Length: 607
Image 1 (cartoon, rainbow, N blue to C red):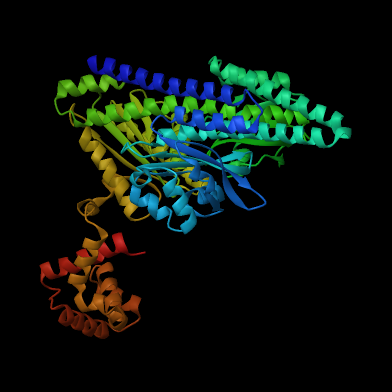
Image 2 (spheres, rainbow, N blue to C red):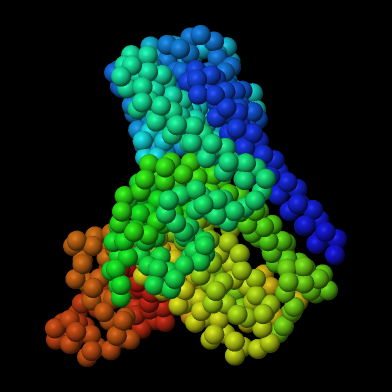
């Protein structure tokens, strides 16, 4: 019970910390949107960026300047005036690459920072060195693109000089969310500046400028209203409901993980959701699409993303162009919805992380009484039979995208698992399914669910899913053995670069070699087959003969027939092979060695 209390206390603290981050973000959003003066907005952005990322000690924001095709410093904190002369080309150094690629950079070692600055011009290097007295002791850098819609407009960069583990992945997520709102504020301020300049220069456009100002006012009012709902913790559904009230046409939100529609919609429309997600998995730009199945559905899709991760889509039915007001409502509402979704994700990830840690502690417990108590803390009542499945997703260098994929597959499996006493959670790019059942008869049902889920995934996505499964009798305090077997089955699939599922019981003799590296296996093969292996070009025919002979269980007739040679020729080849290898195949140890070598080659190195 004490473990349970500690668990929930930690969970409460983590949730409160996440809530504090959200409140800080919301306060900053309101502050940077409180003015339309561009210079003031830029100063406030940098001020609040350092408030949100508490370990950052200095920072600057660069905006893209079209005439010079460079990134220009527009506001800074913690640097001296020399930072104003720091102007980089697109693709130059860290910030130039962030702007070019649209990808964040979190660099946590001085060596890596300077390596990434290798292409920085000598002039720019001198300016950045002079801009801060402690620049040579820099510990970490966090740089994120600032984009409005699909257009990148600048880069925001934070520096940490004194704290070793200063900037973190959490800071990255916070700054990304802040950057999306900062982009809106900058866009609004730029629009306001353009409007004011136009108003001063062209008096006959006054009516048009009034309309633009009205739209800006509506944009600000809409943003403030939706932000207020988020600050008051009204939730995603309330924000969607309010957006629908303001729009000239209705829309629904389709959640990528759950596949649910908010508000609920008709069945025909719901059937198209998978197709919509497939089209927009890697797209960030909204578009009009037409889907034909039993009925034709025309709609406008606005994908909601957090960095590279697709969270869901806003869907407006119909082929008619959206009004300007509807576009504003969607553009203002999408980042706030994204933040709401990430709040829910953050809470779920905290819960899964705590579950993972508690599960790992449970596996290490050997005392039967303590193990049963720990199992109940996880919601598991001990039975006599255990089933464990470890699922891994592989094939995407973006770890955040892999985590999102794991959550999607986990959601799919949860809908199918109906067994009581089952524990399902994801951590990073892996999913754990742990089940305690009365007897082994449940094994086929368990395996079928995992296999069908893996098949469903691999038929739809390029990221590979594979699963190692283990089952067996359970005695309290011995759960780790079953878990390790599932890990071995997964490792076997990974070493062979295969997808699908594998039960530990089907590995066979290979289980003895899983912990050996491919280099060790290769060294054994070179030692076993000596010249046949090292001079393959010269002795390829002999090596093929030996492998065929072993594969046919030493049958001279079958081997000769398969090689299209006479048995006498085969006999002479085998004698030659024995001479080269200095072996006698009639001696059981010699033959066992080449037989094992053949097995290892086919299993771990062959095609």
